[in-house]
Amino acid sequence: MWVGIMRFVSSISLVAASLSLAACAGGGGDNALLLAKTLEACVKCGAVSDTGSDPATDPGTGTDPGGIPPVDPSNGSPGANNGNGGNTTSLATGDPVIALEAGTVVSDKAAPSLGKLTLTAGSPNKAKLEVDTNTANNNKWAVPKEMNQYTRAASPSGPALLANAVGWGAGGGSAVPGGVTYNEYRAYQNSNTDGYDELLQVWTFGDSYAAQYRDETSGSETADKQAWAFGGMTTGSVTPGTKASGTATYNGRFGSTAITRNWLNSDDSNQQVNYNNSWRVNGSSQTTVNFDTNAVAATLTPEMWETEADYNNWSGFVAQVNAAAPGVDPNYAAFMSSQIKLNGTVTKTTTGNSIAGDASMNSADGWLSDGTNNPFYGAVYGTNGTEVTGVFATTAVDPYPYGGNTPANNPTRGYINHSGAFNGDCAGAGCPTITP
Image (tube, rainbow, N blue to C red):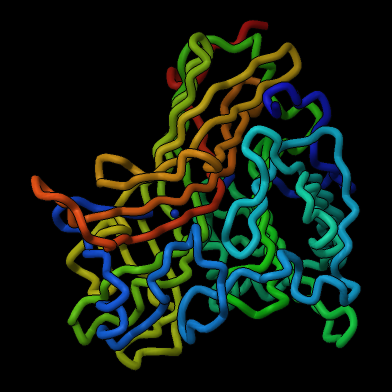
């Protein structure tokens, strides 16, 4: 199991030591919950976004004209044999990576994918994320590329919105409130034989980083290949677990990409976005690590959902939905306020620590979460254990309305999945006790 892979070696290779470093998104509901719709209701609603089929059994036929992009039947990169596919990365150690194909987690929770991030300072700055998916499809992922920094991301009016959407500010290479530094990297080539379109987002904190890789070659909103990675900035970044004791509370931010399907839209003509969509989500995080009992628990509370306006003839801008103010924004859907719960165990060694566990949607809101491959990984960083960073993914369904006292015969389901990263810092008495 991965818990046996300790952080003896940092999974980030810093080519330049002078990098400016610094710190780092939702759904269900109760009686206010948006009703999940049947297939028949979807057909009648006038804004079909998905067939309403169960994502666990739907092979993705590509017949749905406006829904979630279908799963690539080759299980590979678009045109996996066009020269872009052929990933040969094989890593023996490193931090866990959550690998997804067409929005579905493919890496094994107990034996996850591993990653190695390389940052190179220069003009332009460069970055490369190598991923060993540890799956039979590893060779169908794109060949890892050293990407150039996408400098337009530094403009508040440009793609810096991506940074805001994932939760930690629009840095474009500069520090922003919260101490985070954000950089975006892109690789693009137009070719009939080896074309590709890929991006890499990197948030660097005081002692750690989080990164999202996306293979956008197909042009779908749901990336054909996606990976969430995290790790330490130096070989000494990870807190020696055996030196830490007590309970620490880390407050910070999280960001995720989310996919929702099979929800009923409102009758409000001011609604601008379809509730069945691909989203960028961000919000607050609070993580508690008990170094005495080894228990770890985190709550991620969404605050903002973003997607393209695409409903009631609205289009042309990004709609921002404030999940903290339901009823104010006509684009708000009740699933946007549900929290994500992370529960795991910290494994401690004299040289480091690692966290592994499960991610789920808040069951108090009626969610039934996938209990098989819903990974959560992280670690505590810094000499004094002042920082925690990690990644997560979860899929859930809400079968509301319930069957009640009579036999249930109702196929209504509302689906959601999240994949993302989180970071937090402790302060004063909220930090662990470190034994010299």
